Amino acid sequence: MNTTSLLNKACEELERAKTQAAADANAAKLARKVARAAKLRLKQARKLSKMARKSARRADAKSEESSDALDSAQAKVEKLRKRLRKEQHKAGAGCATAKFLRKVLRNKRWMEARAVCRTADRNRS
Image (cartoon, rainbow, N blue to C red):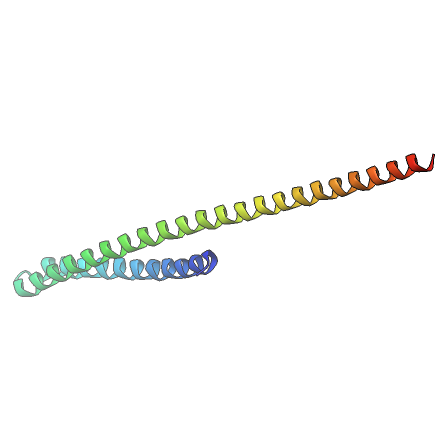
């Protein structure tokens, strides 16, 4: 695959990771809110409180994993962007080299033609 398609794929992965991280953060926030409400209002319902805390811990862990995935996706995108810039820079340098070689060949042909004209002028005189 070329670098551009890899970059596009990584950007899509980054967007999915962002939405997943946001959803997981909201779920963790809601779970903490439920746990707090269970603790404050329903002190006698220890089982509910325990389940809510467990759910909140799971949601926090999942949110942490999602943010790690988001960080790795961002790093991957940056790496691919840097690679693409480097490839484009090399391609541009290659074009400059080709232009230089064409210019040198053009000058060489011109000098050869000039030498032929000079010899023809000498032969005439």
